[in-house]
Length: 243
Image (cartoon, rainbow, N blue to C red; front, side):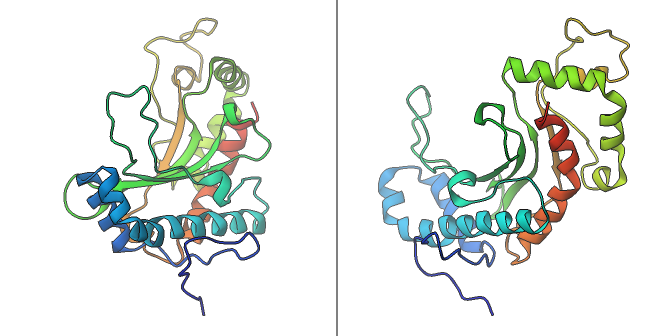
């Protein structure tokens, strides 16, 4: 029987047990969105720790355990996966001090920070109602020019391989939109307009996403659900990340 985590910090030797996020998590995010200021946040810090920070840490650990159990070269832990809730407002016109979304990232092992590729789950208050909007997927987001150049070169040279990966039933059933992202209007210099992978070569990001709901976030089985979805996309992540 899982024991509910009550403490607000976890020693390294005692990984927390993930029991799902809660409606209180959603309530906190909606409240923060309406009251994005230090006074409100400090008055609700205990709710933040209990309903958002703690389960996020527990999910990060649970995903790391899933990756290890399934021999997936993906990193999952609180130090690597979690983002700070404080916004960097130094160069932003928006001076709201806090992020109103939750995000966890799971990078491909062995890759450089500036060449990130891997998996991501995030959620934020829905525009209407008390629920949340969820994104779960991965890929490579806005890679720096040298990395982008290598990805395009690999796609061009191995277009049959990437096409096979994207059309595999295990991937396409969960990620029916394939790879998406901001795209150039024309083929990059050095490639022919009639290249078989022309549309992929135009991409500036290589992102895939799967269906996940707010109700899924409440489930204790979320790590297994996410892990299975991520496992199906691992060949795509490795193709992109090992470029």
